[in-house]
Image 1 (tube, each protein chain N blue to C red):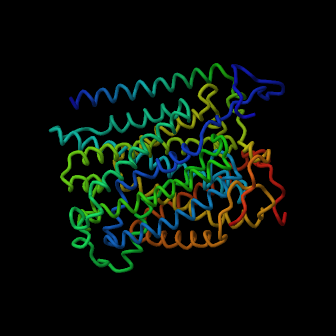
Image 2: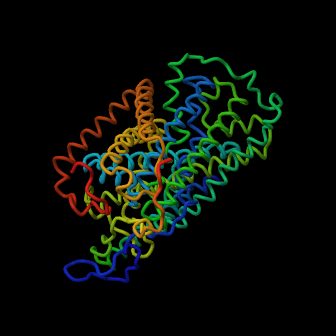
Image 3: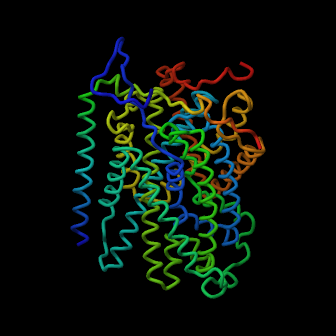
Length: 471
Length: 58
């Protein structure tokens, strides 16, 4: 089995290893929650507020809930499919089994690009926070680069040495970051409207009308971007069919609560004109309360959230790259597992310089935009994947750990919201969107014309499923 | 103090990266490639053995 230990040179007859070295099945639902929410929660501390700049405070609330609906559909669809495809690579493995190799290749790249760029953005955020801290202690001109590379190196080391400790730490710091939002919520005394929170004075009509609300959608993604990363743990959880749906659904519930609380706190303390371009809105909201304790909590919470996100991103990007290597969609060399730590160590190492070079550009907004666009392309694949999945393997033909309700409504809603969000993104980042599309067309051509001949065409399908309907 | 921290961060980062590279090189040397590449895509043993009840559509 995949979780046996290798003891040295263990090659058996005909070049087949006598013992296999695989990823360890040691995770539970708590780790799945920590992976999903950990990647995302930094979006509550910064980024989401640019939606206020596009659509005003109320427009941002609409974006928060509409995009929340988009991600609820993502979580439901992902939970069902991944409860049957218990493989590292998440949506890549799903696409491979359900849609075919070209889609799988693209989805794998969406995942690696989205998570690696998000990791770079998180490291940049840690650097920016340290600059703020240095300035507050009287030192200006801090070079963030050594701290950016330090956080990437530390988290890569953690990931290199084992998934259990990596995601246990993620659980602790993610829970602490979420608690800081709750503490701030209690600290602004929501039971006394007008005492600290000034919604009546600060909330305005939609400043740019409904087109502003649509434009706000692209930044509403920040509240939830990455929850789908829970699927990457599929090969390392003890019971994927139970743990993945449980971790993913509790994760999206946590994020819906955190997103709404964040909006409520910030829109009651900061005018929309400021909030729409703030760098660290929750920390600014804590400063507005005048409480040093709340400021410290929120500073630490922001730091923890960025660290947890980078940590989860390293985990997810390396699993996606590893599984593509294992199937030879990428060089097979990347499909190696560390015999002692049971991690995809070559993939983890390979992605370090890539994340560091994105981070060293210092272009936070560009890096995060490309991450969002890759994520959005991945979400657009999901409804098609879901409809094909139910068509090829109707209920009852294979065992599912979770069946999402109201099919095909969530898939249709997800597709409509993705198209709307593409339009919103085109309004703000049309050039980047077209550049990204062009990139994926070029690499698709490379895969079809060159790389596909190396793919393990039969061996890659590992699920014990019956023939699909109609084949 | 911050300048010292900057140098310290560079040094620790370099140490960590060098350690990982050295460990990876050692593993590559001590284990043959077939073993390192032997992982199989996972299956859910509980689901395979039917220990988990199949979910029904709500």
